[in-house]
Length: 515
Image (tube, rainbow, N blue to C red):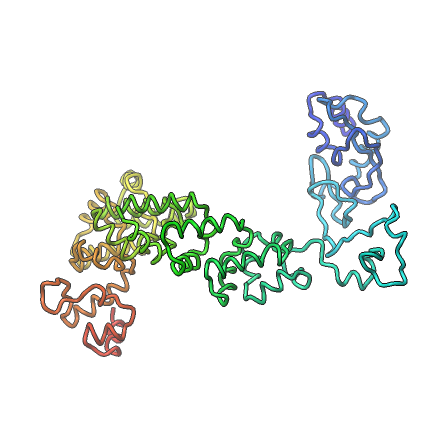
């Protein structure tokens, strides 16, 4: 059977050279190289390592192997070797088995499937055959004029050599001035090593040629504080591989748009990747923002200085949030402009997508929706096709909205089901719905304090329930004792309790335990 298989492989005129070489032999050799038997463990038998086989000699221009590629003697050796292989050994290639008991050396590795542990250093000893050392006096100290032979096997030399390969930058810390200086600056090299693929760049850098000019540019031109260099390089290690001319052009672009030096420093330090982004991309994003919100140059500069990261993720997320606030919630263009000026972080909210969610999670959410609203399969499919984002943020927001509409506003289950079928987007905006439906706040009030849309429903509900308990839940500015949203949502519980609710913070905390 083996003889027949090998005969068919040899006589086949349709199998390409590369395919056959990968199937029955080690990597192909040039036709100008003479064939030598191989002792690779891939060809070794399960009980003996003395079997030898010949490599396949092939031409570069032949479309297929001819019948005289392997001699009869070589075929006999191949058949004998294959017969001795154990059926239970792990398969490496097409019909080839690796001996699991033999540890391969580097010279014996003949295919990508062969692996072995490399030594930390593999410096080769040079061969001086062209008179390089003829004028050297080995009794004198080595110098450029009096070179000594390089012998990596000597202990005193081997101790001073960096490793030829490693899995992390730590192996080069004692040999690289760049790594040592970065550590002195406070750069977290472990974070860079584990989260990026910049290690290979860092170990090849020269301090005076590659790193020092960029740091001088960052301090002297951009105006970054020396004490924050370590933090900045940890957050943006890609800065060290950027072209210095390109970064100068990006800083000059900001200066041409009338940003002063202090503003440029704030933009670069707060938006860590600003210097990594080309001028064309930045200009396109700023132009889109200016046209979309109909802003003047001064207004746009104020927003970018306040929150330079607002254009960090591109125009896609910005467009989706603008459409949601305009089309689904009903904010007008002037209102959106005011919100963007007052709280640009509102337009940086993260969007999640279907492809980022595993099947088990999606199935659990769909099952909850079907049981909660007592829907048939067809009804559920209609809702998901109409608004697939309805389960995008998980079951927590959905549950809170259902409880709010059911317990606090009195909608029955059949009414909730009809509402969910007719307008599923109503169940997607928990914070907005609570502010509008429960607290009866109009959009005009939200425009004045857009930060409220970024607060969690739980936080707003706690403050609102406390005010209801002490009869101070008044949000109409025309009524006496009205509570502004800014006062309602201030970060300090103590200030809210004492200045807004007019109670002790201990009483406020005790009340929260009853919710």
